Image (cartoon, rainbow, N blue to C red):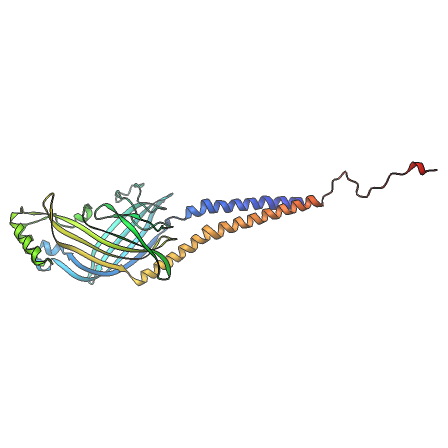
Length: 357
């Protein structure tokens, strides 16, 4: 193979490698920086159920035990990717709250999300479990910003602001700390409302009052208004919560999480609601083992993103540029070493005919 051919091959090959590097950097790597299509993970939490209405005790008029109090609980939360379509994904999010004797509460949600922004999108499947939502529903985006986000509130079917608080080291990782809080706001989710009585006989409410943790003033006020109320008494419910999130920003992995949430009951008078008390108060935080798992997930994701978004494309671009430059140098040297064919290599002076005798 001639030097000219080798130089041409090196130059063209280097340009091709460089082009592949640019494609990886600006097309392939950004496409990979999204919610994975194979997520199947479980997070565990532990805490205390301070108050919970027992529907069975209420139905049997066992008013002494109608409110369960101060029960230690564990929570298992499962998140799975069910289906993907380009930038969209169908995601399952299910939780089970268990006490010493077994499951107490359970919830299941199915979200249609944008795999990059992590915000809810219009349902692109025939799964009827997906309902209209807005904002973040199941996590934070890859490349989380130190900014505000809108998070969906499942009880009220509205969005609440998730505020950036600070940047701090947490469990060996640099994290962004966010918080969200709201309430008391009216509960409008039909699934939640279906688990709570919409009305109660006046006698049941009167018998329920002693079980409620009310101040003397509130108890007296309720006793005063009860005779004026219809029978049965219509009820309304409110939701209050406060959550803190620790997010590894590069990967968007939720490293740690704690929450306090409460559901309250009120007498529904149409334009006015009279608060009565709590029917649920749950406080919980992520377990140490789950935090360790989340740290591992964040490190794995950061490593993958670093190799896909930095090492691989920059390496290809660098190698391609060097190979192309080497090809140019070979071609340039070949031109320098080549002498035009019509130029004599060892010219002989013409004979001086005048000197011939």
